[in-house]
Image 1: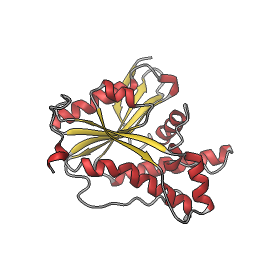
Image 2: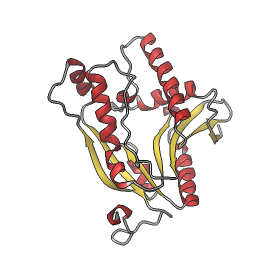
Image 3: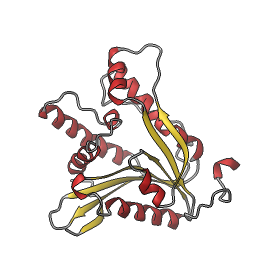
Image 4: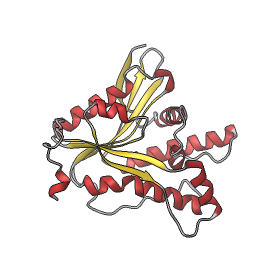
Amino acid sequence: MPLEIREMDTKVDFPALAKCLYESYEDPLQKFFYVWFPIFGESETARKESLDEAAERLAKWHAEDPSSYWQKVVDTETGNIAGAALWNIHTENPFAQEHHMEATWFPDDGSRRFSEQVAEMHSAPRALLGQRPHVYLFIIYTHPAYRRRGVGQKFMSWGMKKADEMGVEMFLDSTPVGRPLYEANGFVMVKENIIIPQTDTPDEAWKEWQKRTGPVPFYLMWRPAGGNYEEGKTVLPWKNE
């Protein structure tokens, strides 16, 4: 089953990408996933509604963001999507203007406030350290049926080549599961980010989602322009800003 990396077809691929996304993050389950893509109930109908909403929202985000670049790895024998990645290719400082996400995929209650706080805390370390043009890996996943076949490495190799062509740094927010892949590609952890949203007035919806997700550990990882990092020698650009 030869695997091939391709640019996504934005007209038709989002439903299949969303399905692969869910199946990838649910095996093994990474609880933070539901903060961005909740399923309201345990029925097949609830799951289908969630998948449909996710596909529509991913397409909307892509259409509205000029930095967005989606890729997929395809099994050329079956046509199945083996994995996908979403890059943000920033030719300017992406944090020059403040932006606050509104989690409209949740009801207008504590669950929405919880999700919005997670999103803001998730991006906070990069907002401090990444105020220059850079390549950011926002989403990457491999379907369980295609793991340990180099799918993730295909995406990483493409992204590093792109960053080197542009002469810019790379950032990504890693989970504990993904960290070994990134370290093997020369990324270093520059900020631990344990996300624990707080409020003085939690309603029942906030409490439910706090219980469902628990603390969310991320690691902001960085690769310098050109990719050659030497401990104690490589200049950290944010130190000079």
